[in-house]
Length: 276
Image (cartoon, rainbow, N blue to C red):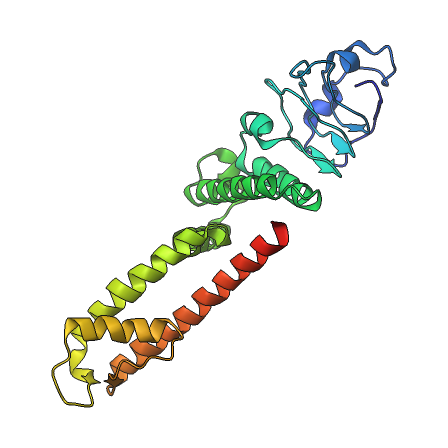
């Protein structure tokens, strides 16, 4: 790792940069050849060791990695605060234990690596970094709402905390209802719970507003079938009509949820077919 040059970082928070004492990188630079990264440097080189697992990179604060080769790299006790990657990425299994402990910095880094992994066609790696980014964002928003440190209390007033609370609630709803758009089984499970559990119960409570053509009593299987008919765009008619305002609103709401769910399923199938 000898081909690097020192640059002044554009991030004002890199206080550690002033403490760096290494000179400009040369082929004889001992820190560069040993695998220890300077602060605020740009790398355009290969990090492939002679034998797998031989490289141990330490430092990397404020560094920028451009079109680097990280084959068989081993990361131990490294820090990548304010680091940026362009045209390359680190394996998630190697980096996950070296991510910044600060949730806001971890969110920025994992977002960067998720985008770069996607550009390189590494779909599984991009997804793992994307999930790590979401977890970091939720942790950051939770810390802001609770004011867990003096930094959060100083930078987040009541208005900012309220906005952070709204963002956290929306993110949690996204997790519980749609699986962040990454887990189709979460959507399928919630769709089954809504169609065969929640809405049949609602229709049972409002059963006086439902009517069968034969004027017979509406039974529980009828309610389940009516809910199934609302949720799925099938050509089969349940024979039950919603005649009251409450049942019409409930049936319309279920139909809208069904349309949204199938649109999300279509997006899952599209992404799968593109990246398979």
